[in-house]
Amino acid sequence: MVALPYTITLIVIVAMIILSAAIRVLREYERGVIFRLGRLIGEKGPGLILLIPIVDRMVRISLRVIAMDVEPQDVITKDNVSIKVDAVLYFRVMTAADAVVKVENYLYATSQIAQTTLRSVLGEHDLDSLLAEREQINQQLQSVIDERTDPWGIKVSAVEVKNVDLPKEMQRAIARQAEAERERRAKVIHAEGEFQAAEKLTQAAEVIAREPNAIQLRYLQTLTEIAVGQSSTIVFPVPVDIVKTFLAKTGDLKSETED
Image 1 (cartoon, one colour):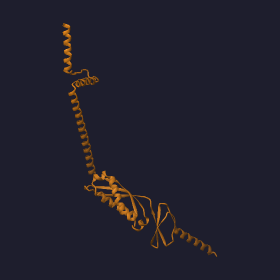
Image 2 (cartoon, one colour):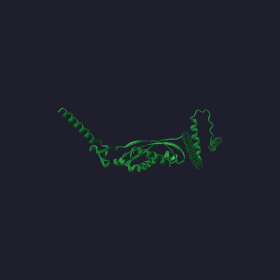
Image 3 (cartoon, one colour):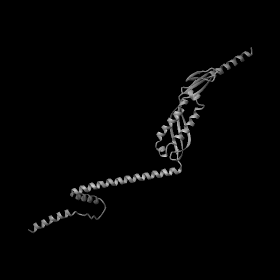
């Protein structure tokens, strides 16, 4: 009679162990891949999942987007420049059963595919295109990696190249090239300004040639500009035409007086 409570307690403990092994709760973003005696029977979840103890085994898979850092890779570009490049990979599991059955460790496999693809794709580009066409290269990486991981039920949504580390010699060469390019642009802009100024002066000369009185107006404008300054003595040339007109009028007045 004394052993009966112990037996009931033992039965209760065993029942609780069995129930704990048989009941699983999966979150909204989780799926359970169920194996019965080693055979795949499908995916279940989310919510409450009932398993047959000892017979069934469940592998829990998350369907959320995973951000994975791709380790820095040594890459030789198409123009034989040695660089070190790292990236970040965004992907998620679309088919949980394929991610479990068709590859041993989908996280490790995806990481290795990303590293090899990063080296091979960037090796097809020269340094200038790698620095200038980052968006196109990211799309190419995403397309290639997604195609290779698709049989595993994995969807690669984006690949972003983060850092491109250049040798110090190459950094100095690029800095010199950029400086030379800026100087070239400055000289071109200066030459264009001189050319436009010459065109305007040519047009002004043509106007003065057609209208002689325009030069006299220019003289008066110059006199106004000089008067604003602090000069104490101003030597201003007077056009000969104006002097002749003044002298002619003076001669006429003298003749009238003598008469």
